[in-house]
Image (cartoon, rainbow, N blue to C red; front, side, top):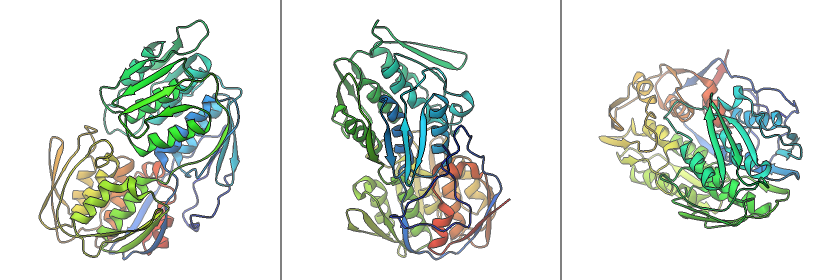
Length: 453
């Protein structure tokens, strides 16, 4: 089942409209090519529909493997990474059926050792399947994951946690093989402490523990909204989970889980990207649907630099960036701190602020590759170690640039919208991994940009 990326000239539906993905079972997602041409000095105005959360969608698709019954997942974003995850599930014996706004996953014939290396190696989140597969089948064999080259992101926390739950885990030849020690093939509840509040490890171990015998406690768990979303899915399937959104997760294992119908949360990173675009272009944008309480850190930083953020209701906010321009300091941290996935976009925003701003990246050690590309556009940024000092300049200039990772691609797009002249961006495969019809949504609010071969 493939969820297609819309053509560059497709209309953007309102948030209430549905889409109809075309079934293509067993197919592989295309690799986007070409160049994005962005005309600068854009004035943006209007309402932007925010899609379902990418980081939730990938974990939730993995979570459907916990049951042999069908699960319908709604508000699924149309992304290359989602296509890849569905293709991975299909390769493991899962049936995926396109729905008007998502997919129905039926994993009655799940196989534990057939995750394809060519897809897993391209996407970090694909490793999430090891937890539910191991919990349900007692055995899993998954290639080591890939993804953006923004840091090491080892799987040691996942492995240690699975071992604590009663699995023997071996890594050889780029393959992680895990097998339950108990003769009945079931995991055993345990007390787990994570050395770092890793989102991926928290999600993997939470899923695995839902079918373990007894209670599992995960201390120093990640608190991101995507954890709450995955826990919501698992509870809808019959899991007993408490403490999601806090540092201590408790999961009382159950023998089996059942199917469900579940809607994914709005994407807070996509919302944050459009918030930064409104401020950078000194424009006004309304975003819906959103969960305002999930955007506390970026809202605070926008207010510090002079933008106005109004929460219109529990699903809608408006950003007025016409007064933006003051500097600020940002340190990326696990939630509820400032998200690393918005660091690049806010760095682009600060290139046109007055004075000096500092950005300290504490989550990933290699997540400032976009600095060189922003400097090609006239930005003044100095990097020492994990700290970037951004000195505001009067204007950016369009230039040929290349996206280096997913969030860097969005940063370069919004920088191009504010720059003088034309920006030509390559590396579009990064952009389409994580943004659902970004170009179409921007055009609908006044931007001028076009993808060409």
